[in-house]
Length: 459
Ligand SMILES: Cc1ncc(COP(=O)(O)O)c(CNc2cccc(C(=O)O)c2)c1O
Image 1 (cartoon, rainbow, N blue to C red):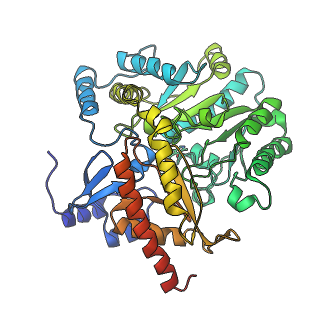
Image 2: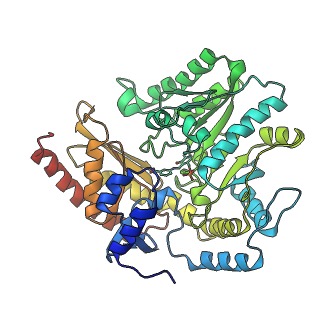
Image 3: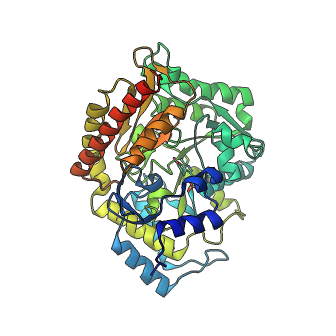
C-alpha cells in the first residue's frame, strides 16, 4: 500500500525532489501540485477528496477509462510469468506475438508489421530513422528531409520536437535538427480568409507541394502529420486536405506518415484517424490509446512498401531495451481486445460520438466569445474569440485560454487550453449522463468566464 501522507506532506516532498514535465517548477512549487490519488471510469479523485471529471482522459490516452481491474490482473499474471525479456538477438515472447497478431487484425488492410517503442516520441523518432533507412536501402540516400507542420506536435525527443512545429520547443535546445522543415497548418479559421473550407483544404495541401518543389523532390523523404492536430488545439483539416496531400505525396514519391498517437485506437470513431479522413499512409505512429495509458508502450505500424524494403534491407540498427516489453504488451493486447470486443470503438462512431458532437455544438455555440465549435468522434474543441463576426482572436494568444482553463479546474472539470483553443478528449467509455454533467459544468464555467472578460475590461 502507498505510504499515507497529508496533501501538504506530498506537496512538500514533490517540490523537494520532482522536476515536472512542461512546467515552470518554481511557480508550480509556490502553488503546490494537485495530488491525484485514484480514478475510476471518467473520474479522478485528489488527496482533498475532490471528485473531478477528466475531460482529457489523462493526456488524451485513457481511452478505455480508469479503474479496469481486468487490466491490472493481466499485468500481475504476466509479471509473474515473464516480467521481462528483450526482443533483440533473435528472441521473442508470447505476449508480444499475441499483441502483434491482434494489431494486424485491427489495422487497415496491408499493415501487417509493427515496431515497438515506449512512447509516442519514441515512435516518431523510430519513424524518422525508418524513413531515412528506407531511402538509403532504395539507393536514394539524399532523400532525407521530412516535412512537418507549424503547430503540429510529435513529441519531446530531439526528433519529435524538431518535427513538431512548436517554436517555443525549437528555441529550447537548438532545434530543429537538420533535414526537417515545416509548412503552415490547415487552420481555416485563421488562414482561410474568404475561401470556403473546401477551397482552403486544397490551398493548404498545395503549401506542401510548394515546399517539396522548394527543397527538391529528390531530397524529400516524407510528409508527416496528425490526422487532427491534437496538442495544437484540435485543428481539424477541411475534407479536401488529406486526399490532396496523398495525391501530392504520390506524385513526387514522398512517403506519407500519419501520427496517430492521439487519433488512434478509436478517438475519431474509426480505429485510426487516417481512415476517418480517407487516406492511406505508408507508416503510422501510435502510443496513448494502445494501452490506454495503463503502461507505457508505443507502436509504429509499417505498411507494405516500407516493410518490404526494411525486411530485405539487412540490419535495421535501431530499438530499445523495452521494445515489446512483455507486461506492457500483455496489457496493450487486453486493452485493444476490450476496445474491440466491448464495442467501445464502434460506439464512438455510431452512438456516443455523434451524441457528444451534437450536444457540444448545441451548448457552446450560444456563447458570445466562443466560435469554431468543432469535433469528430470524441475529440472536440472551440476557440475563444474576441469577435465572432470578424473572426477576430484575442491578443496575447494563450492568455485567455489559461484564464478559462483555470475556471474549469476550480469547478473540478479538466479540459485543456491549447492557446485560446479549449479542447476535450474524454475516455471513450463516457456515458450520455456524464457528457451532460461535463457540458453543464463547462457551460457554468463559460458564463463565469464571459463575466470575467467584462470585469477585466477585455471585451
Ligand atoms: C501526435 C503526437 N505525437 C507524439 C506525441 C508524443 O507522445 P509521448 O508524450 O508519449 O512521447 C504526442 C503526445 N501528446 C501529448 C503529450 C503530452 C501532453 C499533451 C498535451 O496536449 O498537453 C500532448 C502526440 O500528441
